[in-house]
Image (cartoon, rainbow, N blue to C red; front, top):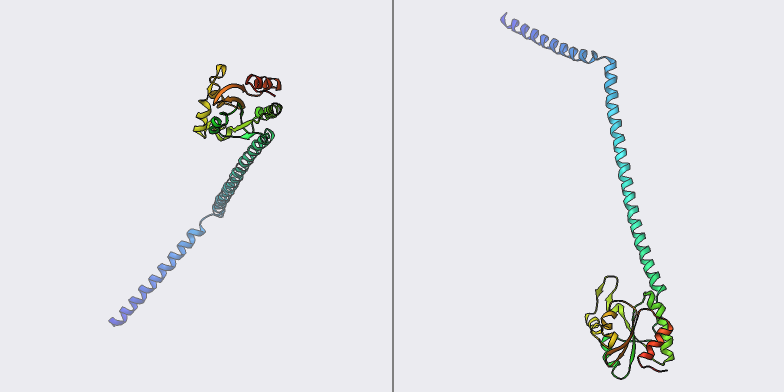
Length: 231
């Protein structure tokens, strides 16, 4: 009898446990069902709005990134174009103010002493791209032809970088700057390494006359005569 009773008690306990589980499940379902439909819709709409805002912000950020990238690229192209234009402008100026020196005898500063030891030489110091040089060179050449004189030419660009204001050949610079001069031309060599064009009339490594800058035909002829040159 006792054994049967124990089995019955076990069965009763199991039944009670099953009932508790069912009651718990029913309670959970009842909690969910107790939320009003309006509240559920509100929560869904709230989540949808958050997602929508995030999508808009992401789109705006992507658009701004694209605009900044295009702007920077445009600035780079503009800078490159400006530099190219400046380079073209410089080249155009050099071409516009270039001049022919083929009829001159190109020498260096170190040649002056030897060249002037036998005769009075006429030396033009100039550079391509110099407006005054371009205007003056043909005048000097014409007068020199009339006097049957071969003009010597020193390229100033090989001695001084004008744009950077930097001496490139210190020996040549010093040679010209330290040339002795007679009378009013005592410091003419020192002046001749500061600008172009300069024309030096040199005899025995000494400046006997000179022309500063551009000059008219009559001025050049007067200089030739003053230096003792004859037609």
